[in-house]
Length: 509
Image (tube, rainbow, N blue to C red; front, side, top):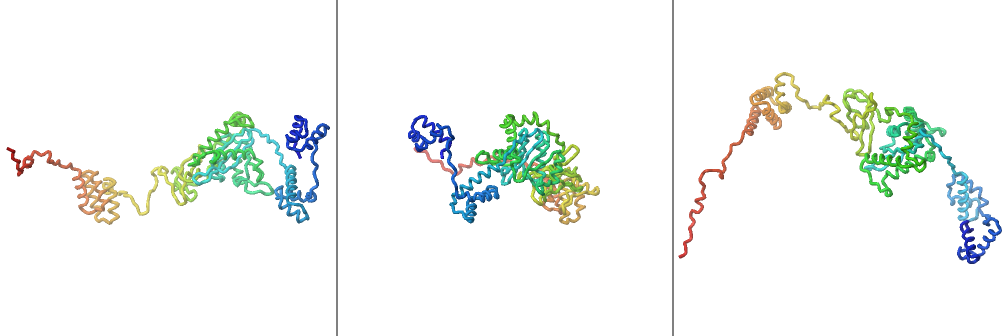
């Protein structure tokens, strides 16, 4: 059967040549075919079509359609042929395949989903979804993509995971980037939003409901396994992944740190939101700032507490908190107060952020590198010098009377001498301390303190050891006498004796 294009070529060739055979040679068909189509055109009748012939599968057509309908059009033709053979079909598998292909096409046309256009209103709809982000140092990241339906404004944020606090923090940041919150937020049936379905009705997680109430938004979910209900953000995720995830097609190099991924997301947002959109003819940023931003409702000054991370109570006796089996220090002024802890980044770049919710809103009060279980992260400035540094078995000298104060005031060497002398069981230690005080008054505190330090280092705690060390130090400090070298001496040298015993040769006659 000739197609419409081929028939037009046949008729055009006949009009140019005026011969059935010549037109047949030009178009590669029989001259009888040329004559048939020319006759039909001259008679003003429709171009003849081939009549459908009776097939062996016509008797089993109802069964074929039944199998296709029962499997939503995905049944294989060889399985249909096996069923037909068991029912008495005597034709070939090729005939079955042709009939199944025709029946599948008819089924798809009859059940084709016809999407009506979604006419959005400004300020109403925000959709968000997730995509697999780039791998940073062997650790996978997540791309959070939000899409404002009317203005087509896109927000792309790199996340370390898809846990509830992380997602809520990303939504809070999205609202603040947009300059307001929409009326509806549409997403998938994530575990951070929906816990289960009962009779097709999604059951929300309480934290998601609290989050929605805090920002005055309605969190809605699409139909399970039906991405077409949020096609806008699906396409946004596809575009973001194609640009941000390193592949052979975009020639993007691997990221060295999580911060580089965040910078790439910022650059991507600036690029796509300033570019004119094909559907609207305007840049998303222009539509957002000119129209939609004024219709978004205000965002609370303080973020939702769950977006800050997990809550921890600082004990009254130590400014340390426990988070994921590790301990981190916080400023000492937060004793007895609550803080929020979360992790930012992945791998060795991961950082633990500690936030305190004060009168002026949430403020970051500390940050530590992520530690493993059982490890401790301490910063000295968090204790302000007002903390107990007791170590089991270690004591610092604390003078309690005038004699002890006079000795300890000599210096650090005196404290070291007292600690070491006491640990070795030195006898008559008070007498030796009094002698050191007397020597400090005689020779000065500095040299005596140095001598005491040397005595502590070398464990010399005898009666005369301190005096001996002090004398040795005094001897080293005296200037050395100048020695006269031979080159500077006035004594007559022995150079005149150099030729003694040497016979001079006789002069020749």
